[in-house]
Length: 432
Image (cartoon, rainbow, N blue to C red; front, side, top):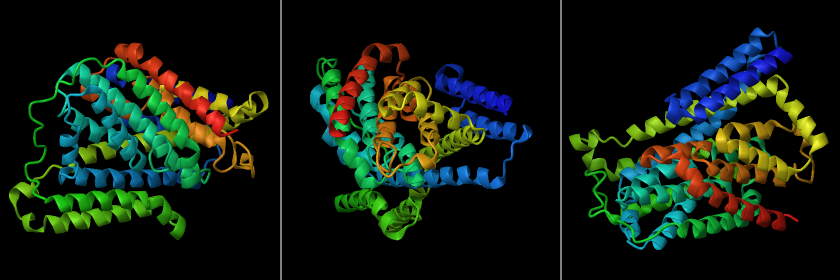
């Protein structure tokens, strides 16, 4: 039993370290997460553990529900983007005032990420920003603004991050109370970071001479774009209410919203369905790649954490913490720091399983919507932002603008840390 546990922990830690340095070793982190997740379960079986298919299926089911939700919302945003729904943002954001652009990018990214997952939001906003800003150095700075805003925006809603979706699925948070408890700390952190990074931006924005056309086959009139935007975002935002009213899993609501957008897309483009240019549209290409990457990575991470649960290691750690530490602020801080160098997803998943269901008291920090669950999301979001290594969104930004880790550590790390500290103070005051 002990040997199996040590082997599984060693395999997963090695895997996470390799994934966090994938820009150096060029290993596909999604494939590695999936591979090591399966290997961990094989070690459990070879070691003679009393493992049944129902246990494995439980973790797969949890992961698949989140993956289907993300695929649905990601596809909705991609369809709207390739129908020109977000074209007006390019014109709206095209300003040479560096401070104005910073706040516009931050607020829009924050708002979208609260409704969609942070990785999808980062991919969308980076594609818009890089067509507006010409200077590489300014792109890097605004990329950091997009990253922090997306991570914070996704941290305070149940549909803004895949780990929040998992906590919602476990029944430890509810949409309204979760958002209410985190909105002030999240906004405080966002404002502090923007004020600090704003002092780093000097001069005016080097605006591209032309914005450029992403899709030359978009002919939708303005009112159709606006209607698709309103219905698309409203249907995603309505998912928590849909789940509460019907009792169905959240991904059912997300798939329903996707079906609605697909019908609108088909109706709006009905007359061009036979047009060769329209048939050859590539709007699913990037979406399929991102969705596959998310699916493999999240499923692999879920299986890896599930193996830790089944071998008893997380239960042992949770009992030790409960008897020797018993401070949710320390739990959140440590998970955030660990997430900064490895990844926030496996650590949040592990944090969900640290304390067994019997620990969910009627009241207190571990109750439904308790301080622990809110801190788990808030600290992992800012912890993952200390270094861009801590999130898939961070890696996406780094790849898009070719961001240097040493530069990020020197100029962004301490600003995120200050924003985190202020947010924690606000969280403590609002939860007295």
